[in-house]
Length: 299
Image (cartoon, rainbow, N blue to C red; front, top):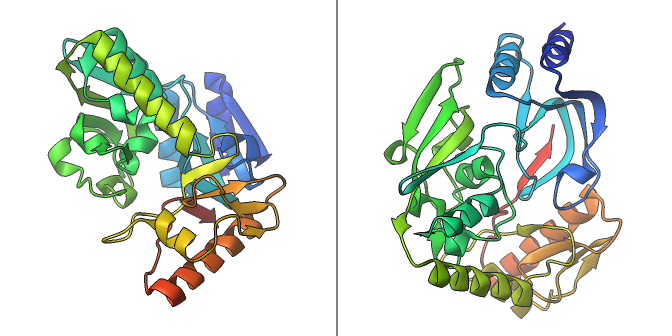
């Protein structure tokens, strides 16, 4: 009954709604996974109605952004893809407000166009605005918490609420959103006036660093492991002789040991098998327990 209600809502709003969908093209790891129902809501109104039906019928739902930090085997419920059709992108003085489905790089480019500084180091992070806030994404010494002012969300009871930065509990790759059941609708960033040429030059520098150091030519989830205390996961993995180690189609990148890449035809089991092997070897040789940064979905 719940799925039929969801399909009726999607038909009324004219948005994508498909059953038993294969998700390999929805994630940056490009690994096959399936869900019972896949939806691309095309407005906030549509999304809010869908969330209401899921809540009232106890239907599991998973919010998917750009799929850049998630590994999916199966999800028995509804996958809601927050695409660019959800919310726009606007500038008001030194603030930028972007819908949760907008890419983070689009926000960075908008900041550049308006000579606003503060987001240069975040340029190139392959995630959506909502996903980036959910995990407090960061790179090269900067994190979302440094530039976010507030977020507009749907709470666990279906109410639209504004959450200020102070209530987000943003820490290293974590936030309050991972536990409070809220769905992020849009995010407002607070930036400063800057020199357009200098902003562009720094974004170019960040892009070059990524291309030079990261295996961008292969599908991946980005950094596979969180940074351990007093060290770096990539260094530990390399010191353990695991650079290039392969399980099926999954490999520890020979370019950057912090990345597990899909060399071709990798399965969920290949990636998990490789991740567990890495964790075991690093634990045995270095006494460090590595923790995955990517979100693993299998339920």
